[in-house]
Length: 225
Length: 299
Ligand SMILES: Nc1ncnc2c1ncn2[C@@H]1O[C@H](COP(=O)(O)OP(=O)(O)OP(=O)(O)O)[C@@H](O)[C@H]1O
Ligand SMILES: [Mg+2]
Image (cartoon, rainbow over the protein chains, first blue to last red):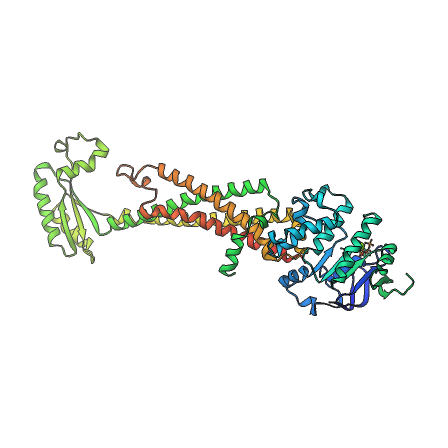
């Protein structure tokens, strides 16, 4: 699905990531962990094309990311649901429309998806807040909304950056449940998180692999978790 | 850009339009600017059409015509007139020569002296209208012959004052056309500024749309539709007001000379209706270009 081949990245200063090679196979479940500032968000951005690597090659759906034009990039993003660390919404539209936004921009029939949308909002516990504007939401509510928006298109890959950073244990279990469920449906999942408890909980439910960034390199963490 | 692209850009749907928050202030400014520009464009158009007509008329009416004026004591007037007409008839290149009647002369003079002019009691010169053939006549030769045989005759060739008038009307028309071009350019510039402001103000909206997989065309069209519609509405209002203003201009009249008749004539009235369409097209192109410049810088 997503393949990084000797990828390196620097924001202009020194090298932040180097020699990163990893393959996210279809249906796999990966965690990405590492200290704050290690480059987790950066690595995820390389995976969905928000950043282009300064070295090496990123392949998404068997295509060289560098060769995609802007329209192809947009189409690729419809197949990758992303939960950003700083969840951004359209602040003037109610939550339900924000969650349905990927459907709108890809020209789907919104009326046909209404049931789907309601179900999804119930899943993330936001049904009562459907008409609220994003700035009126709590941090945790925003994260849940971002997850709902990321999966509404039923994407092939779900990438989540600290999706449980602002929610309590019970809610984080629910969100994890949703991601595990998606994974069982065959989606590829990649989650950046420092929440070791969450990772442990996930490992009891799916075969999750843990990648760790340390010293600018990406390593496969052993069974020490 | 294909016709299909343009159609889908303009049609869009209500829901897709909502992704960009409404901006009251830029909207009103765009409406005002395109209205004002359309208003000015109507006047420039009227001026260009009228000066074109004027140039044609002057060139046409005054070309190939001259006036022979005979100043003579009252008792010799008839003789000299006869003589002059005879000479003119013999001159090759003169198509027609005709002495104006007393009524015609009164009509010519009445704007200056009033209708009750007792013309027969005044020493008014007799006027003879001369029309040339296409080849024209030998002016120097005619003058020589007239001065010898009809001492009171003065040949007044119209080209002398026709040329500067036609030149003036022609350059007036050129100025009006340049004004129309400038108005179009200024509209494009102002819509570009407004569109850039709107794009900058909505940077986060654009980023979010891009992240959830919106294509450039989707994002651009949300802005393009807005500005095109505003320009269309604004310039329609401007054109209606401008045409109302032109309608209020005085009718073309003999007394008013070239200052009247500045309005539109016949099918000319349809021409200003093209202004809103041009305005919308300019807004479309300007916003499209601005949106694409902005979007190119995003991932
Ligand atoms: N746009 C940018 N320009 C320059 N430097 C940046 C930029 N974005 C991030 N960095 C730097 O790159 C490093 C890695 O950032 P990144 O956001 O990938 O870390 P992270 O592992 O996601 O951290 P956290 O766990 O706190 O979210 C940080 O030192 C950060 O300061
Ligand atoms: Mg991060």
